[in-house]
Length: 211
Image (cartoon, rainbow, N blue to C red; front, side, top):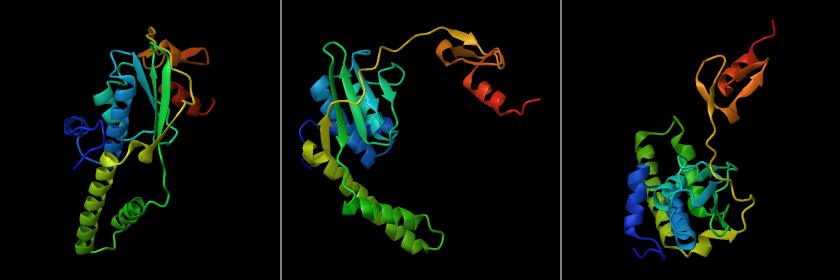
């Protein structure tokens, strides 16, 4: 297979090893990560920031290849349900957003969705179920090959980010919750009835009927 420019088998293997399996979402993440590495470089500490607009497999490829991670505070989730990712470079304020080109009439996607619906049925025979699973495996492979090999502009479009560059990760002190006693970052404490509560304790207290 001839991969698109910037994609190597080593990158794919590294992403799969981190994620745990091969899938179309991870393939999308590899393509986005390769584009980000070419245009922004690899994250050294918090120099490069990624904002993901979806909660999906692609995020793992961005973490392991670009080096943007939740733990470092330079991978943020702004879950809009879109397969889109914004990247920022702090030293020169470069910022770009890459979004998947969505085709509602894609026959491969349509067939995969149809098969998934059929597999959820309890009324199909094991022979039919096996046939569907084999077909689905073949379609997934076809989808991944297309993502790895197609021109970048065919798969994605690049625009300006819709949000400004996120600030550096904040390191705030923790204070104890007045109910459970667990330490809570001060910015996440909620004031309720004169008490300082964590989010969970505040939710439970709010749900209790007034006495």
